[in-house]
Length: 157
Length: 192
Image (cartoon, rainbow over all chains, first blue to last red):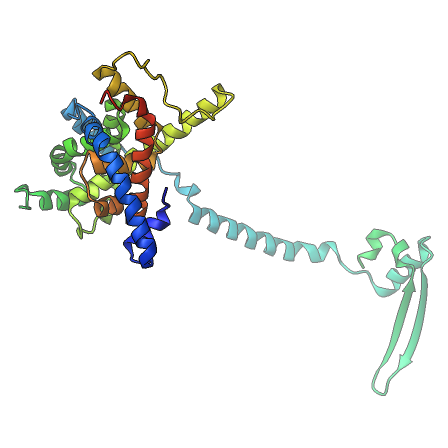
């Protein structure tokens, strides 16, 4: 039995001389074996009556199929482009609303009030303050240890 | 007028513009050829009728893709052939599934079925039945190549173009299809 590749190589002349001769010999042998049986079998392969029954009915069915209304379209508002625009608009509105509302919600406390709140809690957070003076300015560094114990609502500050 | 003396080009132009009446003329002109091509492959007139309808509907939807480089009839018959092969694949797949469900062993699939006793001469209907059975045992691709070659009389090159494969593939499938047919009909050798 030969593979598709053998046939392709034979057709395309990619076999060497010895291989080609051997291949053609097996083909010839096969043809010789088959010829008699095949000549008797071949006429019987066709479907005896291949005439189209109800020919006009076929025209009718084709005409019906191609004239059928196309599949119902999505409502206008469900079209992907519209949905994308609606999504983008909602996102912008949500961003603007947040930007307007959130600063009021998280209004930072005055520094003194914040420090006293931290100290009033039982968080045992150690707070150290270091004052420093630079040639043109002054500053205070507040160092807190144990902030993990500070209540959540204060931590936001 | 085209080479067949029918105003095919005009029908095609009008069909492309959505004229269903013009397309009806095309259906009338090619319905017999399309049906004959399909029925030889699927071997069942009812299925072939449905597939002929599908072929024309597919052609209608794809008219814009027909570039006119080849004859319209070749293009249409190619659609028909592929529709028939797809159908055979579906049937083959379904038959395999049913076989797997029903039979504990699939080893005996290529054994010629229902062989008549040597002392009984198979009559013509029996021979026909056995031939159909043997054709049904071929893979859809082997079946298509065998019938396009032996019944439709297409050249290797034409078959390769229709099935979008190489000539080597066509020859190999044909070789194996013939061998398998002969194996399956071995016991009918004298009755043929």
